Amino acid sequence: MAGNITFTMIKPDAVKNGHIGAILNKMNEGGFKIVAMKYTRLSKEKAGEFYEVHKERPFYGELVDFMSSGPIVAAVLQKDNAVEDFRTLIGATNPAEAAEGTIRALYATSIGENAVHGADSDENALREANFHFSGTDMYM
Ligand code: CMP
Image (cartoon, rainbow, N blue to C red; front, top):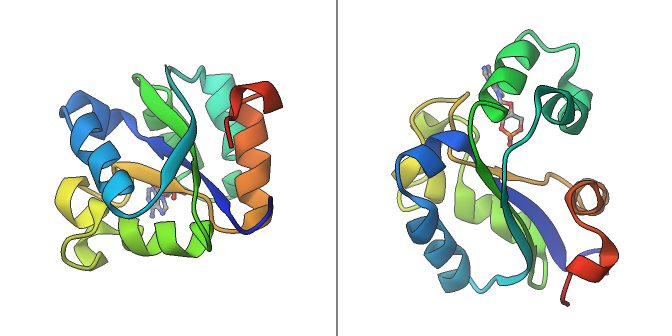
């Protein structure tokens, strides 16, 4: 399975601004198949656990507050070379540096409120997919 799935979240800013449909459409146009998806809201505790790797960063508290501030869409996407291709589709973490036409260039407002999350390695994609979904909720 490694190498052909990635994990994404449409973050609270993009949900609040009405961009769920447009972002899912970009994912489909990019050749990604949705194999698991849910509309949910993270508790502070869950958001903190999800972003544990950033615990020592100065923005960790802000990140946890933001990610638990409203509903999100969590999804597992399948495609050859999923992790890398998805990071190309979403663009740089800071929308000011994101390439034209990427999801973050189109829908993100700041480095903190950057519309979408994309896993940064095959290992993390699996960890993050399993954090949100049980194996029976993924339809490969
Ligand atoms: P994401 O891809 O979800 O992974 C970690 C998140 O931390 C990242 O997107 C950003 O939203 C957030 N982040 C990274 N750098 C900063 C920063 N300097 N200030 C606030 N948030 C940040």
